[in-house]
Image 1 (tube, one colour):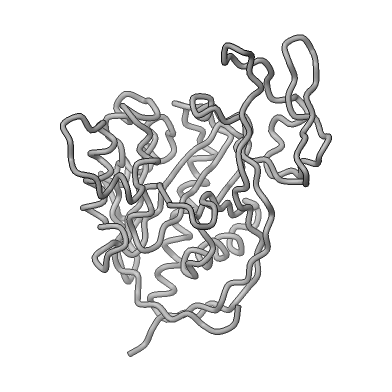
Image 2 (image 1 turned 120 degrees about the vertical axis):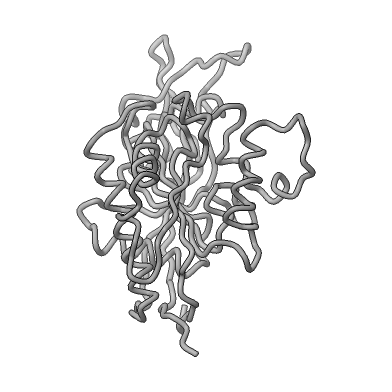
Length: 312
């Protein structure tokens, strides 16, 4: 992709944690920054900390009534208010007013959204697509500055699909997904990684604002290609679980015929897809209710143009 993208400085930035109230790295960090936000300050801007879902964070649950990180679709945000709206729908609209409105000129320049997963995803950088040069350069900056983290880029929205995460209210959004970490538990090593990811991303924004130019590059992305439910019996109950040979193998190539599930009577079920794909969010605890055993992703190499601050 030739050429250079010129952008205005990113001066309004927010860091959201507790979108899911039992993903504790973001909850802990944002609560700390709400008391002392000095670590979010840079020469050209100061990021705003946001506890996205206070009710869920207080109770230590993923959500209070509805998954907040699925409530930022255009349909939900544009719907008329109703007294029957779940708490998270009302909160999504409130966050959209605070940091959006989504798609408007008044929207924040960037929102970072902090998550943990029970899956063995390591350090995962989540975007809704690959067309936003700022988001992609932020990911690349993280990858080059923190290669020992082995950060991977996961694209959650299919082409033409609507984004639905909290960071989508801003002009640019980037999610951090770090695991494995149990729900409701804080791990010091992953907490430190999350803190470092935020700091490095804010450094990138500051460098961009101050005029640093970032050259074009190519990078691998993992783009959502579909999801797989557990095998189920006629009454809808799970009849087989993730096979031991697949467990914790997030981002490892899954080939047709590879072992996928193991039934309670010891029968193996093989992957019957037509082509090799990469499983992610394998056996994620929060996805049981969504009837997702794992998500399949296609590895796609993308070209990203050079990036620089616009000059008058």
